[in-house]
Length: 331
Image (cartoon, rainbow, N blue to C red):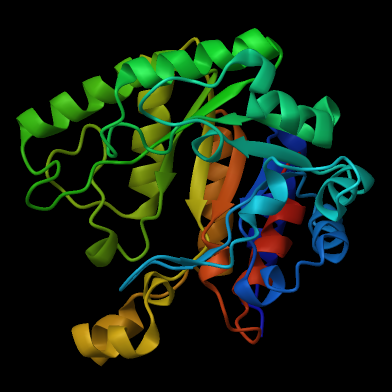
């Protein structure tokens, strides 16, 4: 059952879409497991296009713990490949643009392949330039300890192949817990490293998964050691991007999953009490709308919903909520 939307909220959404001239590309990083396992890209991309979702990042991971598990269909969108492959034909047929996962093409350490054997060149031949949105650099590079030199080399390789291809970079937000950004010094150092890495991208954003705050434990620029709610997180990071990286376009990667769904069920029941599992819920439709609209109001040119692949329950309203909210956003 879908969450109801009140008349006042509906009218406010219409006014937002019509009155401000703000718009963004909308995309998804993953689809629910029960959809992804069909490998039916024609049906999948048709549903995305019907919801005005025009960007796709191929991630099919459906479990985080006790060990990461994926359907493995990421390989349908990277070399070796053929232009006639069902995945690429479906992309072009429904005018969905692919975000290329650089982490599956290039090593974060060591030498890049020679130009005459470059995997991005091969992927462009399979998909066609019109079906490529851009290249996502190494994921959350500061959190994952990626050397800025690797990000620089990746950026330069992409531009050498095709200067028109934008390079995207997604950074992890600050987390207020021991060993992370739990002091002023750690927060200051972290955000400075984010700024340095972001020099090697054209479009920069943060992965913001703030619901519920007690589990997400997100901090936000300007709020010290406070764990913040989703409006504060969106405002804090989008404002930081505008102030610190004014020459970059910005994006937002937003939560479309429940933290509880990242875990294998038996394992989760062994490590967490029932009340914590119940608290680790997915965003409601109103929260999805608020997060996306606030991101766009703050200047995001791309909004990506992340984590739908963790949803293995066809009866959950979450995926339909994502489609409904995406359709209503200003494009």
